[in-house]
Length: 253
Image (cartoon, rainbow, N blue to C red; front, side):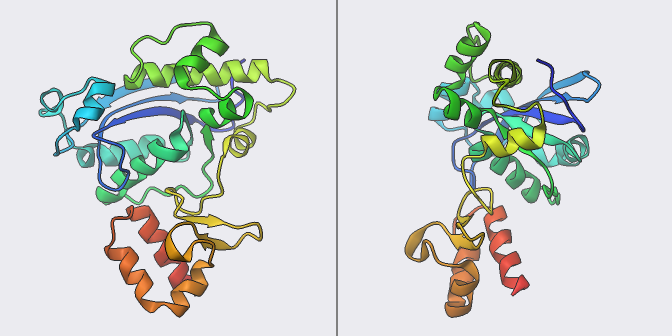
């Protein structure tokens, strides 16, 4: 089934130096930009992360320090990428948990204010977990009857994710709508306010803290009653997006 698009959507996958969104860096990014007229634009980029790629990450993605030492820095490509991604929806496999937060962190570090307001994020893994509960390799085999070769290379994973979503729309035609906002909502597995899930909406739609001693408490209430808490957040090992979200709530009053 072909995707019914009202605007372009970016299917993408990231390989990184590790799994810490706050401190790790992107070393490879592949995206397939799908347009409403059915055309596609695909590109794979590698970046010098200016830090060691962990042995655990290299064992999974096959990328080592020497492979990217002469590649451009993310910040050198950030403006071009932001222009390419502007006004697009996004889709990936487990992307809401890792790829999207890490991408936004890289933009912030590069000084790019990439506005995600109104953007739909379709997490194909979210659909898969609700319907079948497996990983990408299994999803590709189940939906497309193909073996995923070169798993954990960004391009192979990105292409597989696009094909899996199309196959999901065919298989679950009675449940899923070929509509990106619907798929974004259906695939969402949390009610995060920030991308890392440190702040979530409760059942009443109130922004609440999702970790530590104030878990379940209103962010606004905590910031009013504990003036030092915001300073602790701003100096702590949290993502820039999380810090910005706390600050935005604070300034809103």
